[in-house]
Image (cartoon, rainbow, N blue to C red; front, side, top):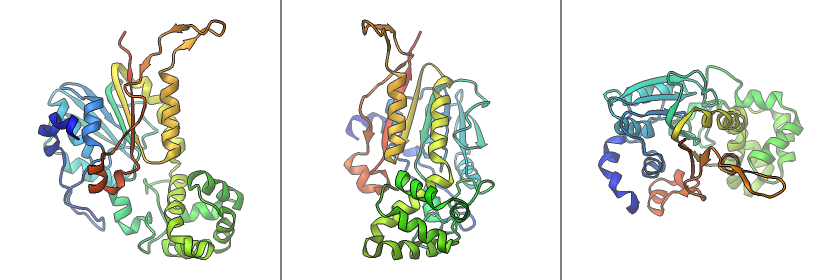
Length: 323
């Protein structure tokens, strides 16, 4: 954090307090992941247009609004209507012209601003999804097996298990969970068709015995990714978001899963690699995008200690070349 110490003056007011609503469990303060690093690399400036494609609880957007000031524009998206409402309430009074839209980050076309100076996506699951037991994201409390970010559409995790074939479940667990024994687990799931998080946990414990505690997080993660089509959404976002950058614009993405990070890395490498002559190997033209840093930025030891959820975070960015 030392090299980002010049940002301290604007970081402290960028952590808004969030009211507790309904059954949601919230803490008094939300600490966004890699905030100082995001501000340092994406460098939002006064009067710029910013797209926060994954608003969450609004921690990063609070910092963006402070940086772009009264003349700036923020467009913020979130698939979770409650997140959107909570963040909008918390960000009231911030400078800038803000637009809050209920939509998945895969849908970044037709926005209030046609082009942006900064585009940002944090692919992590927001805290209320884990902390609010009724959402069904956690195996630590009994709840309906839901796991949808957007509860206004799509199928729940229990419905997904019911509709998917055993082989589809096996492939899903192998791809998104990366743990052994997926076939036995899939067979038990199709036989019992769990409707609650406790029922799913019991099945995992039956399938894995003493190994269950280490497997449970991966099972829940894999189901969550599949239910919300997170990989498909990321692919769509990566296809469209770079085209929405103004010359000199910056795109940054924080990922938490190896498959997500691999997709971001490959996309950014392709966009920043020059086309070459097939016979001579000489560059034919410069790429439209630049890669500020080759390796992803990870959380500092201090941040990882204070916020364990930041430990797996990887931040990558590209910049659109000036003409």
